[in-house]
Length: 178
Image (cartoon, rainbow, N blue to C red; front, side):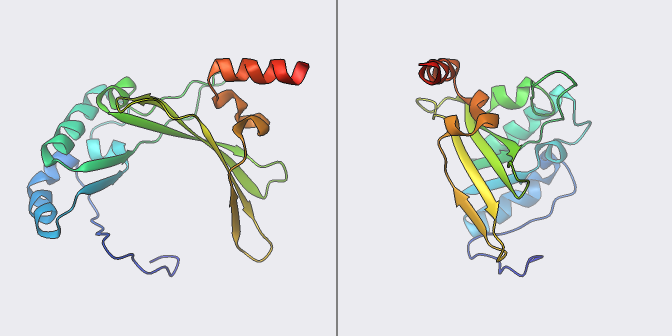
Protein backbone atom coordinates (compact mmCIF):
# COMPACT_ATOMS: atom_id res chain seq x y z
CA UNK A 1 0.00 0.00 0.00
CA UNK A 2 2.81 2.42 0.88
CA UNK A 3 4.47 1.96 -2.51
CA UNK A 4 1.22 2.11 -4.44
CA UNK A 5 1.23 -1.69 -4.84
CA UNK A 6 -2.16 -3.36 -4.64
CA UNK A 7 -2.56 -5.91 -1.88
CA UNK A 8 -2.26 -9.37 -3.46
CA UNK A 9 -5.32 -11.60 -3.30
CA UNK A 10 -5.13 -14.28 -0.66
CA UNK A 11 -2.95 -12.28 1.72
CA UNK A 12 -4.52 -11.04 4.93
CA UNK A 13 -2.56 -8.55 7.02
CA UNK A 14 -3.11 -8.27 10.74
CA UNK A 15 -1.20 -5.74 12.83
CA UNK A 16 -0.39 -7.09 16.27
CA UNK A 17 0.75 -5.10 19.27
CA UNK A 18 0.92 -7.88 21.85
CA UNK A 19 2.91 -11.10 22.06
CA UNK A 20 1.63 -13.90 19.80
CA UNK A 21 0.59 -16.04 22.77
CA UNK A 22 -1.76 -13.26 23.96
CA UNK A 23 -3.29 -12.95 20.47
CA UNK A 24 -4.19 -16.64 20.23
CA UNK A 25 -7.89 -16.26 21.03
CA UNK A 26 -8.24 -13.60 18.30
CA UNK A 27 -6.13 -15.48 15.75
CA UNK A 28 -7.87 -18.87 15.93
CA UNK A 29 -11.24 -17.70 14.51
CA UNK A 30 -9.50 -15.72 11.75
CA UNK A 31 -7.40 -18.72 10.73
CA UNK A 32 -10.56 -20.81 10.50
CA UNK A 33 -12.67 -18.11 8.79
CA UNK A 34 -10.11 -17.36 6.06
CA UNK A 35 -8.70 -20.93 5.90
CA UNK A 36 -5.20 -19.63 6.52
CA UNK A 37 -2.51 -22.25 6.07
CA UNK A 38 0.62 -20.09 6.35
CA UNK A 39 1.52 -17.37 8.86
CA UNK A 40 4.34 -14.88 8.38
CA UNK A 41 5.58 -13.37 11.63
CA UNK A 42 7.61 -10.18 11.26
CA UNK A 43 9.32 -10.03 13.64
CA UNK A 44 10.14 -12.73 16.20
CA UNK A 45 11.15 -10.38 19.04
CA UNK A 46 7.85 -8.43 19.22
CA UNK A 47 5.88 -11.67 18.76
CA UNK A 48 7.66 -13.01 21.83
CA UNK A 49 7.22 -9.97 24.05
CA UNK A 50 9.56 -9.33 26.95
CA UNK A 51 13.13 -8.30 26.29
CA UNK A 52 14.49 -9.16 22.86
CA UNK A 53 17.52 -10.92 24.33
CA UNK A 54 15.53 -13.19 26.67
CA UNK A 55 16.01 -16.87 25.93
CA UNK A 56 12.68 -17.91 27.43
CA UNK A 57 10.71 -15.91 24.84
CA UNK A 58 11.14 -18.35 21.93
CA UNK A 59 9.28 -21.19 23.64
CA UNK A 60 5.80 -19.60 23.90
CA UNK A 61 5.95 -18.35 20.29
CA UNK A 62 6.95 -21.74 18.90
CA UNK A 63 4.38 -23.56 21.07
CA UNK A 64 1.63 -21.17 19.92
CA UNK A 65 2.54 -21.65 16.26
CA UNK A 66 2.59 -25.44 16.62
CA UNK A 67 -0.79 -25.31 18.37
CA UNK A 68 -2.26 -23.31 15.46
CA UNK A 69 -1.14 -26.05 13.04
CA UNK A 70 -0.12 -23.68 10.24
CA UNK A 71 3.06 -23.52 8.20
CA UNK A 72 5.06 -20.58 9.49
CA UNK A 73 7.73 -18.17 8.39
CA UNK A 74 9.18 -16.33 11.38
CA UNK A 75 11.49 -13.45 10.53
CA UNK A 76 14.08 -12.92 13.24
CA UNK A 77 16.67 -10.17 13.23
CA UNK A 78 20.19 -10.54 14.52
CA UNK A 79 22.15 -7.93 16.44
CA UNK A 80 25.18 -6.37 14.83
CA UNK A 81 28.26 -8.49 15.55
CA UNK A 82 30.61 -7.39 18.28
CA UNK A 83 33.76 -5.67 16.95
CA UNK A 84 36.23 -8.26 15.69
CA UNK A 85 33.63 -11.03 15.50
CA UNK A 86 31.69 -12.35 12.53
CA UNK A 87 29.42 -14.55 14.65
CA UNK A 88 25.74 -13.74 14.54
CA UNK A 89 22.65 -15.24 16.07
CA UNK A 90 19.09 -14.09 16.35
CA UNK A 91 17.96 -12.23 19.44
CA UNK A 92 17.30 -14.82 22.11
CA UNK A 93 20.27 -16.95 21.07
CA UNK A 94 19.97 -20.63 20.16
CA UNK A 95 16.39 -21.23 21.25
CA UNK A 96 14.90 -19.74 18.08
CA UNK A 97 17.10 -22.02 16.00
CA UNK A 98 16.71 -25.11 18.18
CA UNK A 99 12.91 -24.98 18.11
CA UNK A 100 12.70 -24.36 14.34
CA UNK A 101 12.51 -27.17 11.81
CA UNK A 102 14.22 -25.23 9.03
CA UNK A 103 16.38 -22.11 9.32
CA UNK A 104 17.42 -19.82 6.49
CA UNK A 105 19.86 -16.98 7.00
CA UNK A 106 20.19 -13.99 4.69
CA UNK A 107 23.53 -12.14 4.68
CA UNK A 108 24.25 -8.91 2.88
CA UNK A 109 27.34 -7.38 1.29
CA UNK A 110 27.40 -4.07 -0.56
CA UNK A 111 28.04 -4.07 -4.28
CA UNK A 112 31.38 -2.73 -5.46
CA UNK A 113 30.01 0.47 -6.97
CA UNK A 114 27.55 1.05 -4.13
CA UNK A 115 24.53 0.85 -6.43
CA UNK A 116 23.26 -2.53 -5.38
CA UNK A 117 23.41 -5.40 -2.98
CA UNK A 118 24.95 -8.83 -2.91
CA UNK A 119 23.03 -11.31 -0.79
CA UNK A 120 23.79 -14.82 0.38
CA UNK A 121 21.01 -17.17 1.42
CA UNK A 122 22.21 -20.14 3.43
CA UNK A 123 20.66 -22.94 5.43
CA UNK A 124 22.44 -23.44 8.78
CA UNK A 125 19.83 -25.97 9.98
CA UNK A 126 17.19 -28.25 8.56
CA UNK A 127 15.18 -31.19 9.84
CA UNK A 128 13.72 -31.66 6.36
CA UNK A 129 16.32 -33.61 4.39
CA UNK A 130 19.63 -32.44 2.98
CA UNK A 131 20.74 -28.86 3.53
CA UNK A 132 20.52 -26.67 0.48
CA UNK A 133 23.75 -25.17 -0.82
CA UNK A 134 24.19 -21.43 -0.20
CA UNK A 135 22.85 -19.19 -2.95
CA UNK A 136 23.94 -15.73 -4.06
CA UNK A 137 21.71 -12.96 -5.36
CA UNK A 138 22.76 -9.68 -6.87
CA UNK A 139 20.36 -6.73 -6.88
CA UNK A 140 21.49 -3.86 -9.08
CA UNK A 141 19.63 -0.58 -9.34
CA UNK A 142 19.26 0.53 -12.97
CA UNK A 143 19.15 4.10 -14.27
CA UNK A 144 15.51 3.70 -15.31
CA UNK A 145 14.55 2.94 -11.68
CA UNK A 146 14.18 -0.79 -12.13
CA UNK A 147 16.11 -3.41 -10.19
CA UNK A 148 18.00 -6.14 -12.01
CA UNK A 149 18.19 -9.41 -10.05
CA UNK A 150 20.75 -12.03 -11.00
CA UNK A 151 21.99 -15.21 -9.35
CA UNK A 152 25.79 -15.33 -9.62
CA UNK A 153 27.80 -18.31 -8.43
CA UNK A 154 28.51 -17.55 -4.77
CA UNK A 155 32.20 -18.40 -5.35
CA UNK A 156 32.36 -15.47 -7.80
CA UNK A 157 31.30 -12.94 -5.14
CA UNK A 158 34.40 -12.43 -2.95
CA UNK A 159 32.55 -10.88 0.00
CA UNK A 160 30.16 -13.87 0.13
CA UNK A 161 32.57 -16.77 -0.43
CA UNK A 162 32.81 -17.32 3.32
CA UNK A 163 29.15 -18.38 3.38
CA UNK A 164 30.04 -21.61 1.58
CA UNK A 165 30.82 -24.84 3.44
CA UNK A 166 34.53 -25.06 4.32
CA UNK A 167 35.24 -27.92 1.91
CA UNK A 168 33.93 -25.83 -1.01
CA UNK A 169 35.98 -22.80 0.10
CA UNK A 170 39.11 -24.99 0.21
CA UNK A 171 38.36 -26.44 -3.25
CA UNK A 172 37.92 -22.92 -4.65
CA UNK A 173 41.24 -21.72 -3.17
CA UNK A 174 43.06 -24.78 -4.52
CA UNK A 175 41.50 -24.35 -7.97
CA UNK A 176 42.49 -20.65 -8.09
CA UNK A 177 46.05 -21.45 -6.95
CA UNK A 178 46.63 -23.95 -9.76
